[in-house]
Image 1 (cartoon, rainbow, N blue to C red):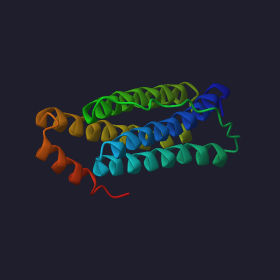
Image 2 (cartoon, one colour):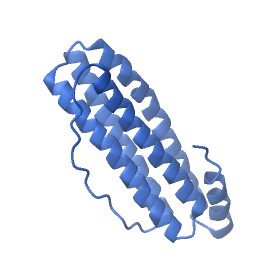
Image 3 (cartoon, rainbow, N blue to C red):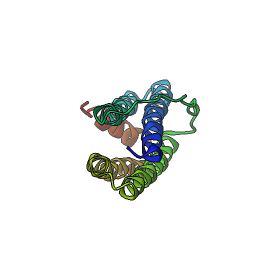
Length: 162
């Protein structure tokens, strides 16, 4: 495997684990605000992110390369509102999309078809990730975090399977 691509894949393992940390931090905030449905949704999201990291981790191992784990930064811990949580969620998912797109470019430059094939799953996943975050954010903006509507959205988010 191309050395630059291998380094970038190892970096993405870290980035996916950071995403899990970020969503757990957001879940802790929501739990503290008595929004268990929001917290549940974010905890499921955190588990998904760990799964994404492991997908890349396993791929690196499967192609005979070594995984090098890197330090994970501490995520923010304080948010002003559920709306800010999902503004940050959408912003973060757009950043991850950019990271995946950069990995695709590196894999194309290296003419690495197995990596390109693996990354296609992530390209598709990011469409869903951004769509879900945008939906929740737009719903929060529509309801303006008003009492009964916020409680109804909290209950809806609490039904997420995972």
